[in-house]
Image (cartoon, rainbow, N blue to C red; front, side, top):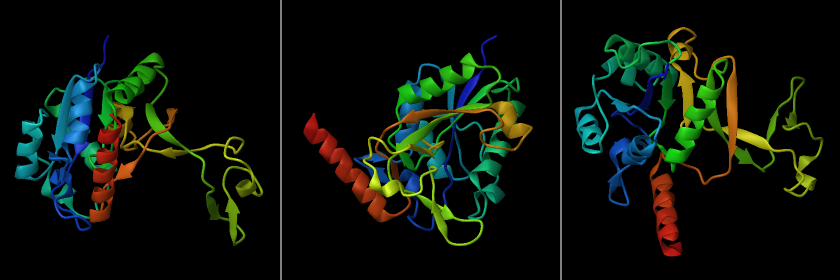
Length: 236
């Protein structure tokens, strides 16, 4: 039986770094639209909902084509509340109102501040998860070719990726790392949230992609995203 597929975009009203960032205009569109539009365009998504405690954000979300079947509890919009807690609460509410009906149903997690996601990537995550009933999630991992270091157990630092001196190799032969970008695209079984209170679950599938990534948390992030859109328009 076909699973229900619900795209969920959490968007609270409060923001300390960039006030009201989820509805700030970028190229004359609210930031929220850059997640709603690809979710609506994805062929495998049944519904697109925005979870917010803010009436203005809810109105803008509906204007962009999303649903707001309930308002988020204000306690879940505080600065110290993580997205996992919000998603657990939201998925349970979706079961309560009948949008989700089975633990194997699929949720699509999208962050409104992560730009610029594509409908095809969302569909690929869903299709990949559907193809493997044992999998708990399928998410985007951005291919990285930089050198990353981590704290060593006995002090000091060590390179990640299993190489003693990774910086001396050409990027074509470096071992690849993958940055987890669930906010750009992730299909997750409903039980992962409700039963495990987790994000990816025990059997995730990583889908490697190479893309430009903009995470909007400050005014300069928004400025760089605007310049990128202008550059892209010039190339067309």
